[in-house]
Amino acid sequence: MQDNPQAQSGALYIVATPIGNLEDITLRSLRILREVDLIAAEDTRHTRKLLSACSIATRLISLHEHNEKKKSAFLIGQLASGLNVAYVSDAGTPGISDPGQSLVEAAHAAGIRVVPVPGPCAAVAALGVSGFSSDSFLFYGFLPAKPAAKERELANLKACRQTLIFYEAPGRFADTLTRMKQTLGDREIVVGREMTKVHEEIRRARISEFLENRILGAEKGEFVIVVRAEEAPKCVATDEDIEEALKRLFAAEDCSVRDAADQVSRQTGASRKRVYSVAVKLRT
Ligand code: SAM
Image (cartoon, rainbow, N blue to C red):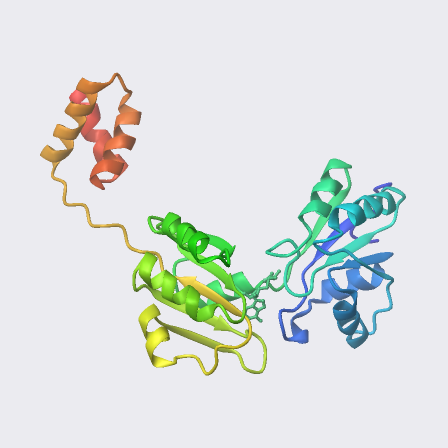
């Protein structure tokens, strides 16, 4: 194949597929799916529909979360014998809250070339239309279903200063928003529902508005919830406060200027650069 001209063993192509709208399949994905010797799919019935809509007749086998380890061993054998293999999940990018990780790990371990064939991913699609900062974001995926575990995970994320992205299963949306409001506060969120499909909705509001005002046309279907990062509290520490904190620290322990700057910056909310320059003056 053009993408893998010299290798003795075949290549494993990790191919993203549409998350709803078939037009989102890329030209390269179509070519790879047509040219490989074998396609492993999370659900062969589902993928067969995509392939027949695109007139692709490549042989299909199943690889899902319950048989991934066993089927991976088989596929590594096929790859080692020189066959090219593509892996597709039901929708979006394989391995992103989907099977694929064990197969990819096994391929790396066997020295097989792993090739990304990028395309749709619900998390990235929702982040892109959120208007929230994407300089740094945390993709969480699915929260646990059990209430206590869900709350514990949300509590762990409370101090995180990054945009947060969650996947949510149908039926759990209202419960998840209620717990998010309790734990993270009434933040602004963007909900991407049924993205790229007929009933697509992209809505931005506070969590309470979603809970009270029926902002979404329906609470059915697939959701991505993007949560705006909470702004860092404004630093009110004066240079004297910083100096005092540094003196206390230097008196208590023998730490470097660098470590002291880190600690006192966290403690006071002042920038590390500002604390560092005060610490350097104190130490000279
Ligand atoms: N691998 C996929 C990807 O790259 O996005 C994700 C698979 S995960 C099993 C399915 C979850 O992704 C859904 O429960 C939902 O949270 C999100 N999702 C997938 N398609 C979506 C869509 N069209 N609109 C909104 N969310 C979607």
